[in-house]
Image 1: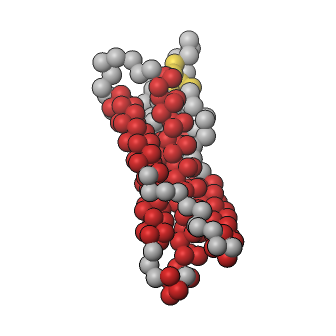
Image 2: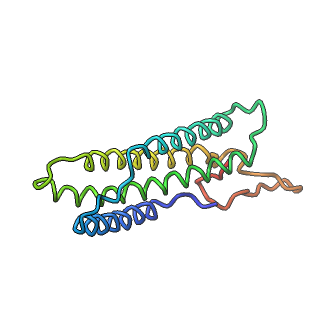
Length: 171
């Protein structure tokens, strides 16, 4: 499994920001409300962040030596996938609401500071939290390169188990 690419996160955020800005511009010009998520979505985002962090801490504890029982490989894989999905979703949420916020700032002189601006700022913060937790938990799921990195063949020669180089492999 590949690690998260920062260039993809950035690209997704930029494309989502452009789409959010254009759609908000069109929606407000035709008298529709801003196409942003309700503040209740922050509860869902918080639940996902807490769940991802909790599972990641469990994998990190095993990685750091609390190995009194075996780590379920399915749990570790699901934790890694959840962390990556959290980061990518956070990038989309961050970008979309950043685009909406940019368009809303152009209307501040006409409308004043409205709840839409505060809602966009809150959702941008939630998206940033999802990105950070996703990247952090992905790091929790990565084994250090020297942890069981070499295995011995029958002739005693050490062979590298992973083709990932110095990054290590996933738990």
